[in-house]
Length: 264
Image (cartoon, helix red, strand yellow):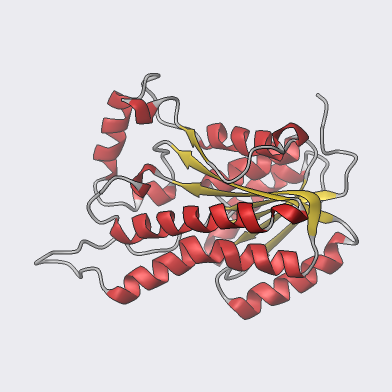
């Protein structure tokens, strides 16, 4: 198999790459020859299983770095980027993937559980929306992006539809999309393209945290023309396509990757 990125000193930096869409993306890009850096936040007890997944990436013959740290902490982000600049040894970041999930899934009204407060919105929007800009700008200021770079983030159908308990995340996804559009506009003169992928319902740890996720999955199976859920690998395939030279004219858009689920 031809590895498109094999002869280039280019990297993918994946925020939230130890599971789900981020991990599938790391494996896909590594298979095609791109060096991988993963930023993740996991407990010590989770690390043995995660290291097994990371070993699959290194077996592709690419360079690999991982940082188990808080991607949302400004000082830790700055230290990480400084260290990464040394590790890359003149290499550049071709693809930045924002695949982080940190937020509140509380109802607005409840007699039995805590309800959504303003600071819940603020935390969720900062982590799942504004942090895309924080990372993009920090990497740009460190001059680590390649001359033809891609910024990819993950949104959901909750950007336009109301789901109970999803208000804060929905607001964060809309923020993420707005920031993506302006990155696409304002960073374009520097060779940076930015797009969101709207994945269909995918059975990940993040989905299972949403109250009523089993019902969401059942409904999605009924709606989907192919009668199956979206897989992390389906989404990873599109990140790979967006990273190719031929995708350079795709910029500032939301790409739906759900097998047609949204049309039904």
